[in-house]
Length: 380
Image 1 (cartoon, rainbow, N blue to C red):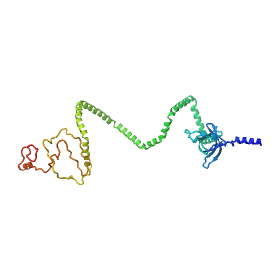
Image 2 (image 1 turned 90 degrees about the horizontal axis):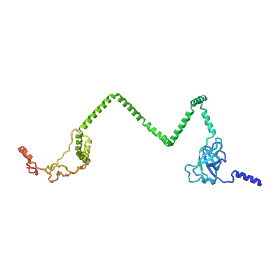
Image 3 (image 1 turned 90 degrees about the vertical axis):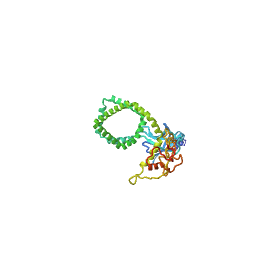
Image 4 (image 1 turned 120 degrees about the horizontal axis):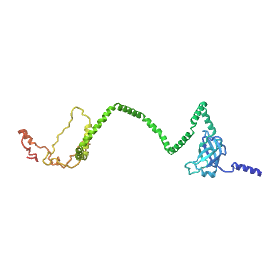
């Protein structure tokens, strides 16, 4: 009984029956061949568990149930990656835990489900793909192709080696630019689509350029004449400009005060021109002729001498007085300036008797200035 007990305990310990484990499940598209129970689960080459059972799911995937060592779970991040690998092409499979680029701070926990990312290619898959390729190849054509390759490479080993060396150097130079190349390849479809959309316009431009070049070739004699005439005109212009350089300079200097004054009064000019736009853009007259709206008003103050003589260098600057948009029912206010031309200066706006016109009507033209006594301020 003692011997039997020792043997049974040894068998139980060998099978791991006395050790505790934590269940973890791995979902994989397939397990591959030679995936046996008790296959090792490794992390950095060290065993951290074993395969407890393999289950086939209804969706075609495989669920691999792992028995993990609980003392090693704190070393495995929760977002670890899973590969089903093998030591050789014909070797048995095992589970390889691959740490992610950014490990999670949480460790692997009991009952967690991991996703298998990669299953090692097996020899049966290689043979199956090789057979499918060989079934498409005709032996006589393959023999001819291999013979052509043999003749092409015969005696050219040194050149082939140099070509491979140059290719390696070129790839070494291209390697740092691979991210940019990948970005260019990713952006290429958008660029190609843009060119495809613009293809009709590009073709039209090319056609117009062709016609333009044909026209230039056909009219090259006229073009030569035009260029010669342009050269002669340039010579004449150069002669005129050089001869009249001083008068032109003086004219520009004389125009400076005028342009300065125009620049100063540009707001008033703009108001005046903008005020004429409604008249120019207004609707046409419904009937032929000119429509006038007349009214009679009392006369404004008459001209008085010498107070109303023109004044040089009058001040005040540009005045728009509500222009260009005065508004319906409004009128611009009267601007009182410093040239003594205020229409309400004397406050005697009204009807004035023009006795001088009556005398001339009765007696004919009279010599001398007007003798209307009501026109005060006039000489005589």
